[in-house]
Image 1 (cartoon, rainbow, N blue to C red):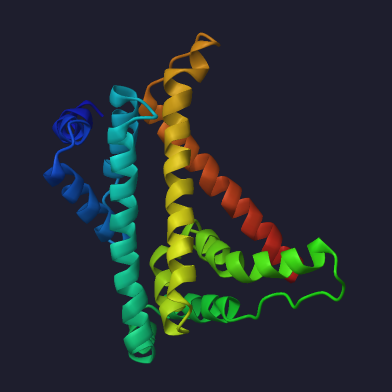
Image 2: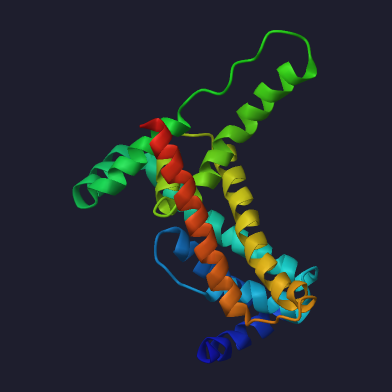
Length: 232
């Protein structure tokens, strides 16, 4: 971890001072991760160190969050348009090499392609508001859930493009998932720097990051196991 901190510190210092090259580098890393190439710890450690050095509410923090969103949008959009323009060919090639991935794309495409809730009869506000909210947020929230499901980060982008899902809804899903992902990492930093001081406990930030990741995967794993059992 000391080696990681020494490697990341120059980047974080550059981001804190508003360096365009540093932000461009983090945009590139975020885009690379979207297409399935793992680059562990760089984005999380960047968020935490900038928050701890410059403040959780600061201009460098805002620039970093925007940069990560732009990178994620670039990477996921490239997969979206790949699926939209060459969906059948891409899925067929994926099916030959990774059959399980092709099955996941097919299942997710089916879920995304389901119609929204029909408008309920009546003139009450809820009867009109719920279908409207469902039509706006149904697809973005499904994309959010898929992106937080192990193995579906890249699949969700290809599936959305393959069924020609509305690009605006896709971008909204990427934005929501980006905000949630960064917020969870920043919550770790906040607990490390402020919350646990009240209890007299100050664990290293990397321990909290690892613990949070484990809890997230355990929580999602339990949720999907329960959901699968109910379906069966």
